[in-house]
Length: 389
Ligand SMILES: [Zn+2]
Ligand SMILES: [Zn+2]
Image (cartoon, rainbow, N blue to C red; front, side, top):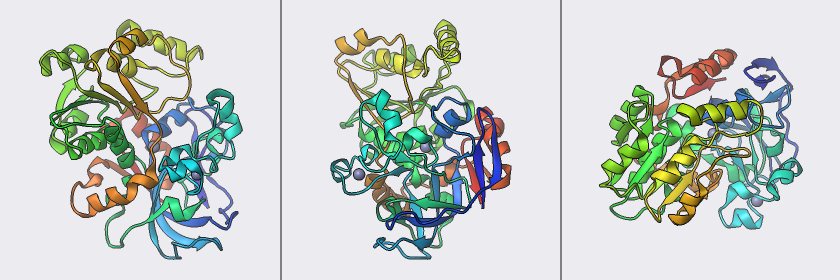
């Protein structure tokens, strides 16, 4: 089959690779009908995710058709149309039983690589390095889906792929970001990053009862989408100081919660931005925590920081005293897809949102390199690229 393989920083190629096979009785093979490039794929593309190996197939946001099932798969049949959670969970361990699927104890055979840094390994993720299981990714014609009864969620026929695809990753990620804010009536939620995950987080914040949602970004087109698609108020941080603007907009109080939908490659400003870029370039710091620093200062006292943008390692120069003295609550983590997808699917089917609004470009798999370049450089206002293998 054809698949998008990582060969080093800024080097993806479409290679011919062996077709996936059933390896475990609980596996299914899915023919991928649509897969997207996620913001966190960019961290792989840019070479910031350790334990990638040349030839690894990337991609984790996808849907398709079940073409083969293992002998112990109970809920799926050949021909079923499914959206698959980007996070892999066994459905049997204590964490999966608590609906904390991204903390699964059994789905990450590469966990030992992670434990050296994290103490305890977390769940496997499709196409996301050997520290996350070394699973082949979804930018391919076919993919093996382990624990398929749990991760592959059946969806109805007759609805275009692009309306359902983002249920695999971006929508549940954004939803979890909002849910972690424990939103109370009257709350103001500030969201850094108006990409797909940020927009879904903003929509979800309103779903969960926020009174005001404020989007912070620097790309006018993204801010326009935040304004028009999800009815957020907007701040362009290249035009005004985001912290000052938030203070002013909230009557001097600060937002009740702050969501980071940016992650480790934040575009820092001024001296601080330069400092992080320089340290990251020489590997003195793995992640650029610019958004985290801003949130710690901008959030109201006693507020919540909800972190959905991906961080991979170490951060530096955190105003931890501010967070401590303001009694902030930090919540974060990879999303628990299996817990959220069925409910969000209903929301989409009931017309609560049309997720295809975040899709800007559709390409054949063979043009993956162009897709990654467009997405990285936000050419042509690129927000999400969908491959149709
Ligand atoms: Zn993702
Ligand atoms: Zn588990």
